[in-house]
Length: 113
Length: 109
Figure 1 (cartoon, chains in turn green, blue):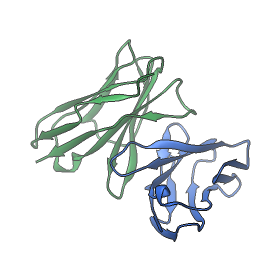
Figure 2 (figure 1 turned 90 degrees about the vertical axis):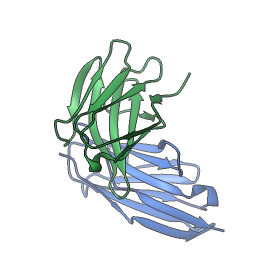
Figure 3 (figure 1 turned 90 degrees about the horizontal axis):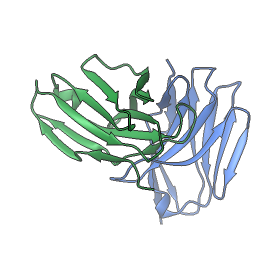
Figure 4 (figure 1 turned 120 degrees about the horizontal axis):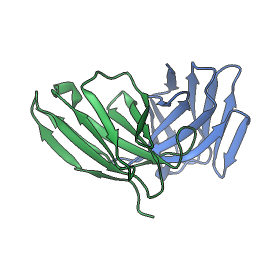
């Protein structure tokens, strides 16, 4: 099976802009989670989607949003970008929601200037 | 929400020595505890996990122990090799998977 894919792999944006990142899970996986990875802060949970519904949300401002489509592909959007949003954004998929192995994508490296 | 503390943040060992990474969590309802390894420039990958009905689990040179009463769990790597050098993340599943901040392990030949 093909692994989790994310597009684009790299993005450069300026403050105030918005950005949309895409994640395609492993075929058959219905759960997609998003994480923000920054040096020293590890992996911080953004949100989880399962069967097109947001199941959980982390402690991030409302500028961060997401959605999941009927084919389980997911997108996350960040509006009004700030310098502090520069990070590696990882998505991970799993067959079911909750307590199971998550398979990570390669990430999207977002740089905000 | 769940708070996962991980120590140490960096660890340097000689090849062949053992390495131990410790994590504590706050949510007593957590019952799934995975460990991920992230090599430089690569994606995190699961190396071992443990569920709350088990106290210890081993897979070759890697073992994880869980103490639910004390709310802590540990990763043990024996006979370390240079290819074990990576960042290791512990996590605890409450309502979501919450990660520790990572331990950068360096194994020197």
